[in-house]
Length: 141
Image (cartoon, rainbow, N blue to C red; front, top):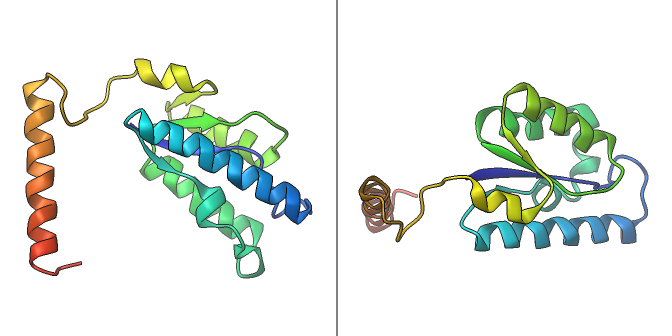
């Protein structure tokens, strides 16, 4: 499942560099655990860290919201005070995405992974591997 990771960040709220780094590390840890469960993740904390000098809050909100609207199938909400994350939860709810706040909950939602018993899932994964190999072999990246 494609999961958007939302939670306290602090770049736009004037948080200390130490608090921002703690929030980034917590988001990375959550993302890594989700990947170990077989999910794909988008973690704005890691991608957008340090961009506050180049983009306004509204521009960054638009970038992140586009991932919720066009990419994510679910949102994982890290606990903590965050007006931005609360808005992301509302947006995810509006688009009927799964919303989680417990890692274990994410394991009950069906997803396509290599090694699953479903013939369709295995065929999709093999097709994906063939396409990736073809792209890498042809240097089309």
